Length: 84
Picture: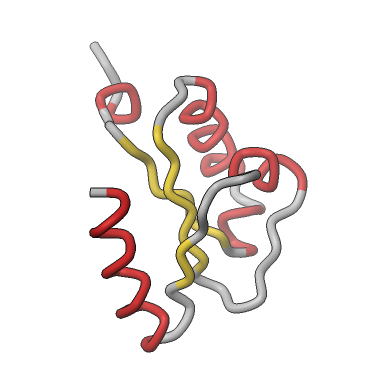
């Protein structure tokens, strides 16, 4: 049986310190990358800069910043236009 990740068209990767340090998130994001899934990086922590494994997964990808209410509204419009 296929997992949800295998059936998905895209995966949202959350850019935050908590996501960065989660081994479950690391496994899921790296698997999505291996499966060549479309990855949508979303910044939820202002000023966060991914390191290590996370920086490799999102390297070169357009990032959407939703770390404030103002940025959320503008980024959601861009996500809907470009990603959906």
